[in-house]
Length: 112
Length: 112
Image 1 (cartoon, rainbow over the protein chains, first blue to last red):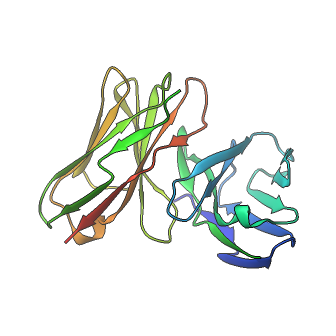
Image 2: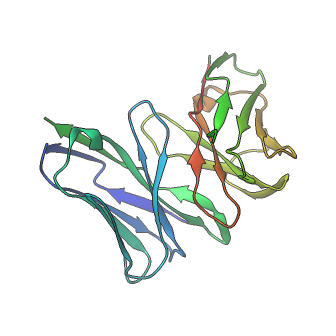
Image 3: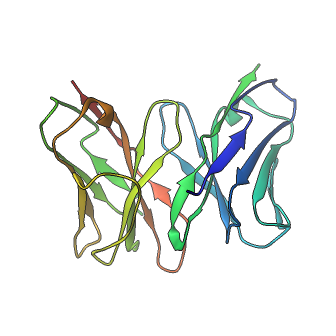
C-alpha cells in the first residue's frame, strides 16, 4: 500500500540553528500537506502544496514540493523554542483525494 | 468562529466494551475525518464522512463505525474494545472544496 516516510525521526538543534525535515511518498501525490503538533496538542494545518516544484514561505518556514511530486521538505530558518513539536507531512490516499496518509513525523527539539 | 470540538476529553474503558466518541465540526465544514494516533506515531486514517455518507475508509476492522449528522457533527463507535485501541482519537473537519483539515483536541481512550 501507499507509504509516506519522513526523515529524520528526531532532530535536536540549538536555538538559532536551521532545521529541515524530508518527506517521501511511494506514489506520486496530487498534493501534500504539512502539519505541526505541539507536545500534548493536536495537529495544526500549516500548508498545502499542489504544483510540481512549488515553493512556499511562511515567515521562517519554507516548504517545497518535488518536481516528481513524490517528495517534499520543510525548512525552518533560525529555529526558536516555539518551533518545538512534531512535524507531519500527509498525502492523499490512493484515489480518495480527500483521505490522507500521514507520515510518522519528525520530532524537533530546540535547546535554548 | 468555533473550532472543532470533541467529547469526552478522556475515557477509560474495559476490554470488550463499546465506546462512542463525538465530534462537532467547525462552522461551515461539511467533511469530517477520524484518525487514530498511537503514542509517538502519526495519525492513522480511520474513515471520512461527507454529507452523511462514508467517503473512504482506512485499514480498520468493521467494529470501527461512524455516523455523520445533518449538522455535520459526527460520531465514532468502537465495539468489542481491545487493548490496542488505546490511543488519541482525532477528528478533523474540512470546508467545502478544500482539502485543508482542522483538527479537534482529541479524545484520549484508555482500554484496560
